[in-house]
Length: 191
Ligand SMILES: Cc1cc2nc3c(=O)[nH]c(=O)nc-3n(C[C@H](O)[C@H](O)[C@H](O)COP(=O)(O)O)c2cc1C
View 1 (cartoon, helix red, strand yellow):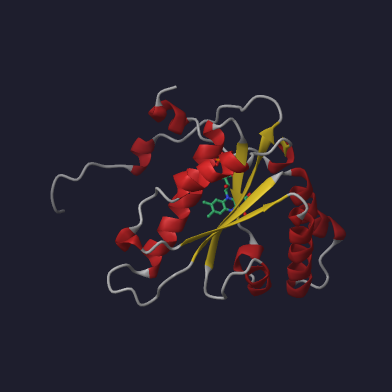
View 2 (cartoon, rainbow, N blue to C red):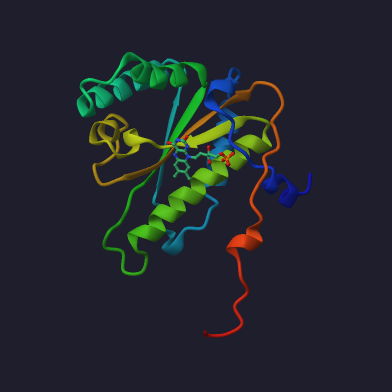
């Protein structure tokens, strides 16, 4: 398929429809090579990728549960189970964070976060190109100090994505997308 046509087909897979098999080491390496090929002003290299798979997913589920209960001691069982269920079903999770240099002379923090976001998009696209389904989630865990520490990140790192990747059940359904013209205009000079 033409690359532009492929890009237009990008879509998230619901995590409940993702399962085994997950990508192997070579495929994960490919996803990450695609990620670090993204635009990166000043070669800051702000991205940090944390790969969670295999038995580590259970521990990740426990970390999420601990963090959730600290934030919401009265969280119900269904909410607790949702995180654990996702990590049990989906073979691979890649957390993407931006390690921001707040004092960079030319590249403000917002640009460093954009770089990490673009890296996350590249991972999603690379996974889809290899036939996997994926979805990018954040939620309160992305802003949780305990989760950051548990992942080996710093308190001031910005988690931009938890990307879940696996084999999607059934056919990928094409999604109706908005007409970009609605959000676009051609500039012909100052107003
Ligand atoms: C930074 C970021 C964080 C997101 N976090 C969540 C999330 O926590 N939960 C969720 O349901 N969707 C989240 N989404 C949206 C999904 O990734 C996805 O785009 C959405 O479900 C629509 O599906 P589509 O990608 O196929 O259009 C997030 C998207 C972005 C860009």
